[in-house]
Length: 154
Image (cartoon, helix red, strand yellow):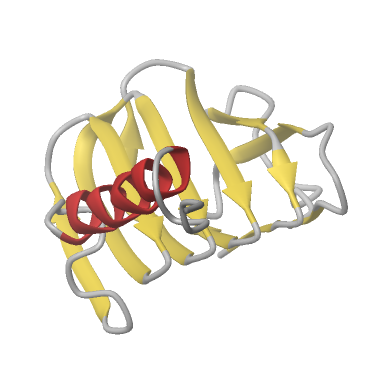
């Protein structure tokens, strides 16, 4: 008598996939999937993740130093308009995989994008105003975009 296709390695693979699904369902990353989660940050470092969900993050601080934003098949909105930098520059690591990241910055900040390379990634960075101060704080954006989009505006 021969074994069926789901005995042995096949059964182990199915159990592993189910266990991974349960583990993801129980993590904080996927809680609220489908609904917009929002948070206000008062610390200097930003951590925002959207895993197959939407996440809105508002930063209110006088000592913003940068952080990490990840959108995996999700949408992250980061509002930095009420933040001031701690120093002259801040680095924001932006990772998008089939996702979208929108970043709103104060008008007096200069944005220096260093995004990519990636597959089919696109970015829309607002132009610095001609009257911007040469000593204005600089927000450096870096990271890969894989079938993703990053937009920066006011």
